[in-house]
Length: 243
Ligand SMILES: [Zn+2]
Image (cartoon, rainbow, N blue to C red; front, side, top):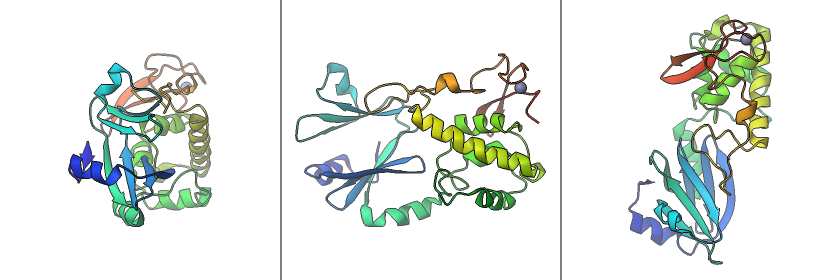
């Protein structure tokens, strides 16, 4: 799970450092240390970061355990181990992000409707939902929120970008931002293994309009929700009110 460096070397560089700042870029969590390095963490589908005052027996199964000077702990647990942590020089972070080619952050002030239209105009032949999830197009939007935004804007996840009307693009833009802000307020969705730093599940699941509701009635038109696989990912939509 520790990438690009041997565990012993990782330990040597991390032990004794102070945490100076915590931030996020795309789906990456960045813990800036006082020694010129940053921990860059991707939780993927099953990763968890947990803060504990005291270690319990089951915590010993965690893949990485950081102990703080007051004897509290930060656990990184990932039972499928798809997630990872890299140690990157803080001064080289921007270069690293540039290499990853992340698109703009949808919650950044600079991400305006005009900007969204402009980005879409460069991808006319793509299907909208996989495009929203493409980290080089937009940063940080995953499978669940991409399909929720399509439902909100009443467009099919399979719609080809160049067929989208002005109003649909504007609706999609507004729903996407609204959904992301709400989901953050409710501390995420926990449709998989995600929990917050205190081990609590996110509370956004009851707010989801379409995800994981195959065969159930659409909240808007009472059509029957369908599920397809699109670009390898389970995708739900209402075949009646989404066009
Ligand atoms: Zn519907």
